[in-house]
Length: 128
Image (tube, rainbow, N blue to C red; front, side):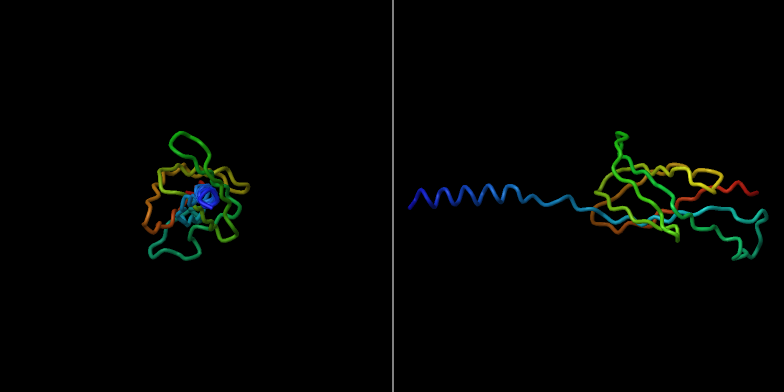
C-alpha cells in the first residue's frame, strides 16, 4: 500500500512538473499611418490633410540580439496588435506597395504589469 501511494505521488509530481505557466504577454497596440498627405501645412489644420492609415504593413519584431520574435500586419484601418513578453525590442516596418518611403525602425520597451501605450509608426509619403 505504501508503495502504491509513493508511486501515485511520483506520478502526480511528474504531471505537475510539466504544468509550467506560459510566459505572459503584454498587448501592444500599433497604428500604422502615412503622411504628410497635403503639400502645404494649414493653420488651423485641414482634416482632409490628416495622415492616412496604412493597410497591409508588415512589422517585424526583433529582440536585442536581432532574433525575430514576432511579425504583425496592419488591417484596413492601419491597426494591429502584438503580444510580447516584457523586454526590449525593435519594431522594423517593411516596405509597403503604394507607399513611397519606409518607416524607420522603432525601439520598444515592454514593461510587465503596465498598460502599453499605442505605438504609432509613420511612413513618409515624401510630399512637401
